[in-house]
Image (cartoon, rainbow, N blue to C red; front, side, top):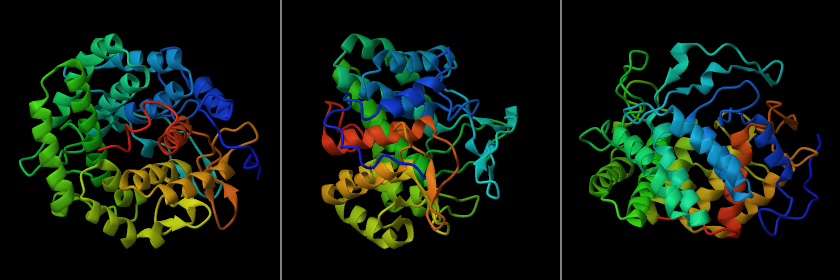
Amino acid sequence: MSHMSHMSRPTSLTDGYFSGARDTILALQNPDGSIPWFQNGVIDPWNHLEAAMGLNLIGERAAAEHAIQYLRDSQAEDGSWFGQLGSAVPIDEALHQFTMQGVEEGHKIRDTNFIAYIATAIWHHYCLHGDTDYAAANWPMVRAAVDFVIALQAPEGDIRWTAPDPQTPEDDALVTGNSSIHKSLICAENLAAALGKDAEKWTAARVKLADALAHKPERYDRTWAPKTRYSMDWYYPVLSGALSPAQEKARLAARWDDFVIDGFGCRCVADEPWVTVAESAELVMALLAHGDKARAETHLAWLDQFRDENGAYWMGMQVEERVFWPVERPAWTSGAVILAHDAVHQTTPACGVLVGR
């Protein structure tokens, strides 16, 4: 097990500390700008943009904008994108590795959370660079995407997890997905304000969505078993900005011991000793959003142990066996860690995008 925890923490995001993460993402980026999870892996707009925002923070603006151009080129007329489900990539537990199988058309869906995330990425770009012209050029893409998403909002406030396509007929909502959409709507409203655009209907949708996340748990997981074993359903509402501080505190405390392994990070699921780096980085940002900077800093420091010899980040670790697993370094994992570093250390003007209200 090789890692680089002995390296000093970055004083900036461009001092070389993240060169391994940068090189990993850049090597994965395709000529069309798309960034798959890993080589020949699935592509979805959310994880693609997570990696792109990480690149943008560490000085790779051209590559980040190439990634955004990919979405501009591939957006459907109705504002949506298709993405490939990660479940199309089975994890072989016996071999401790990812095995890639053919991704069939049936695995491609229009996930509303994936679609809304473009608003976060463009607002992040604007906060980082202050480039009004670039934001304005991408405004039509953001507007179309957000309008598509809020059109799928139920009267109760929740937003269905996918477009009603033949392969995804279920009219249901996901806690994690809706939490991320809430954050994206905040970013969309901020972008609209910066560009002098009207966002009244987006604000109305966000208020209704916040009410559903905070007060209507019955609106989620209506057609399948609750996903309470997944850590994202635990911390994402805290990161979303939809809950009150008291609700955030209670939520974090209620299942802290279920999901956090001291000295390592956040489990992906409560019943497995598997800490994943992206979830741990997002928990760092959730803690920061809640105002708990001390624990955020502690948990961020734990992520050093998941770096390979070049400084790229493994997907996670099977803690009982002390082995990195799967043996993959996904682009979005590095992106999430870079975003968490910026949020905690406030190294760029975009540091508050994912943790602000």
